[in-house]
Length: 166
Image (tube, rainbow, N blue to C red; front, side, top):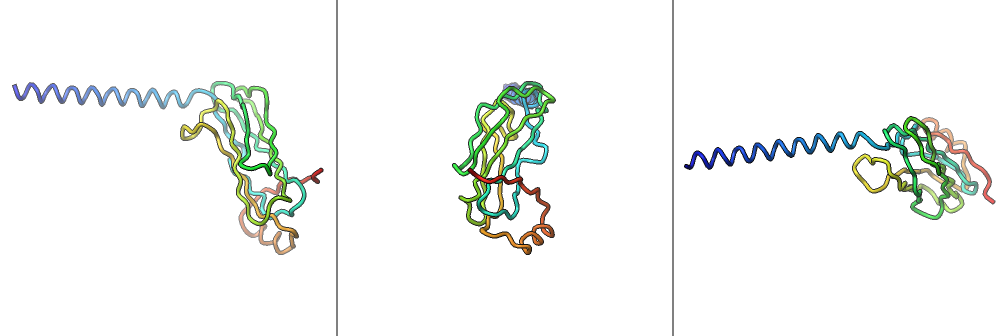
């Protein structure tokens, strides 16, 4: 009788393990289908050293590498110092879209790190409710030649386009 109970218990454990493995496989298959972002130049933009005053612009371009259209419902910056624009119509699989940011540099003092939150139907890397992009840089009253040289010798950065604020 004892052997029968042990055998039944082992079968029960084995069945539960098989069910969990099947559910994990099904879950990972579901993660691969659906809308999915791939940002062309990564999820972080470093403006480098920029002069305070003008609005610094950057556009995050993305491709929908998923199997369903991406619908971006809202894009919210972590502070009011960043204006946002984005692709308002659905981005079909294989097509490109954008998230454009305008950072008000007159409100920045020194090194800054900002986040921009994307509310969409896209699959997120770790199952988060929203997708996050990052911008950073160093806003100075005066950018010197030494700052520019240090920037060239240091990490590679893509300079943001600037336009005068209104």
